[in-house]
Length: 134
Image (cartoon, one colour):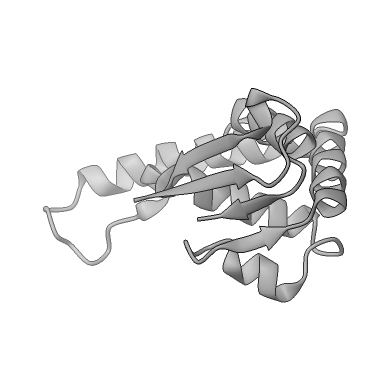
């Protein structure tokens, strides 16, 4: 399963389409919601976790891009990436000790977060003219 984002009025090919599988999307969207909590409505924050057609308008999309760029500039995105890598490493170590199907499996191992993914999302947001999350 993945999350397909379609630009509403794309100004370039980069703004026409953005995709992350569920493993990449969830950390990116959680990070976006955390730092754009005053930009996004609660319905949009919640809707971004589902493939139900949540829409983000053009002005809001630019505000998201600006705020996410700010997290890169001020080091918050780098800090998130570092913490994610540490959590992934710890989860892998923990999971090695478990037998397949153990309910104590730490899913952090499967949810990557990178600045590169944030940067790609910023470009999409800037050039999408608003977008729909499907």
